Length: 136
Image 1 (cartoon, rainbow, N blue to C red):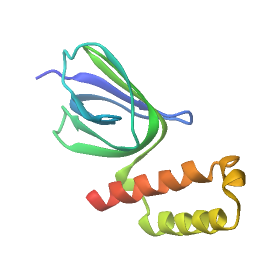
Image 2: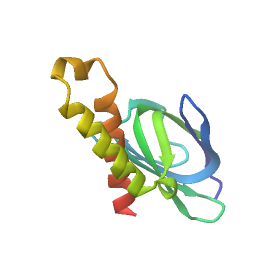
Image 3: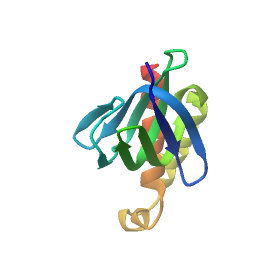
Image 4: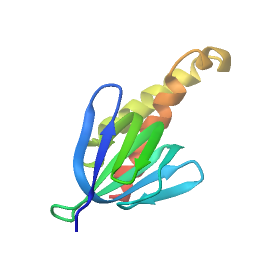
């Protein structure tokens, strides 16, 4: 069965560009799955995990995502994420250390000061990575 192209792109790099049979992404109202021939769609992504089932070997690759959008046409799915990382590349101990350091910084500043930083987004990213790694 011929599939469709799936790209996962961040502001830093293109992580994935491969032929897929199925793509599942975290939407703000729940997971959304796409097969070849899906109706055109543009939607906001929630933080979570995307799964891409490749047509070549049938393996399912998993990616931690933070924010962004998904664009779907009948023959392509493009995931434009603020941050993305293959679940296989997540170092759980390192992420836990980062999370502890972020929480320590947040505890030492006021809520107003915290809003002026990226610490809340960084903390959310750590949590997304840990949740994705635990589901593996």
